[in-house]
Length: 102
Image (cartoon, rainbow, N blue to C red; front, side, top):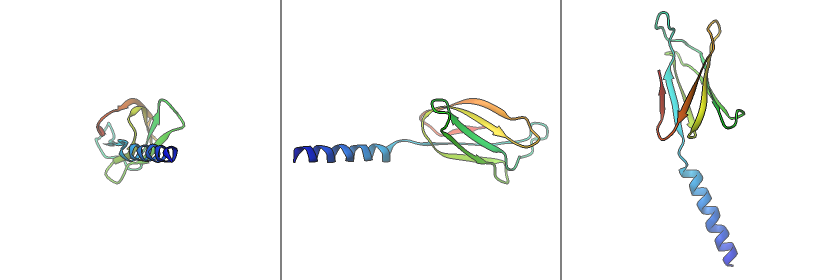
C-alpha cells in the first residue's frame, strides 16, 4: 500500500515537473544586408549543441519574421539558409528568457 502511494506521488511530481518545465521561444526578423528588405521563406533552424539530432525550425513569413517555440534552455547553433544567399551560423544560449535575434 505504501509502495503504491509513493509510486503515485513520484509519478505525480514528475508529471508536474514536465508541465511546469520552462520552454521559451526564439524569434527575429531577417533582412537583406544590401537593401534592408525583408526576406520571405528563409529557413531558420536551431540545433542543440548537446544533441545535434535535436533540431527545431521554421521559415520566415511574408514580413521576414520567424518564431521558433518550445525551445528548452540550453546552448544551440542557429542557422539560416536561403537560396542565392550564403548560409549563416551563430552560437546562441537560451536561458531564462525568450530570445530575439536581429
